[in-house]
Image (cartoon, rainbow, N blue to C red; front, top):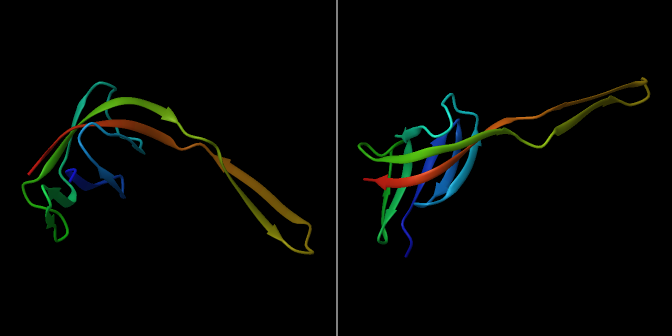
Length: 105
């Protein structure tokens, strides 16, 4: 059984194991910095599952910031039928790649 954790970064949840690379919303850190993530929602160690309420106290994940980049363009459309109104809009989200170094309980 592989050890894993469910972490919360930027309001989103990710299932990670040690050595994983995860794409998360932009973090205000420099590339190459070490980041400590203290919001662990669930931890599985050797088949023993620990669930937080809402977070596990004292548990943390250590990660390294690999790089920052912009994601694919997200498009949206607004339209009102029979009114001649149509509007398109788009955005490119700023993202960060994290490499999970260790998960400590």
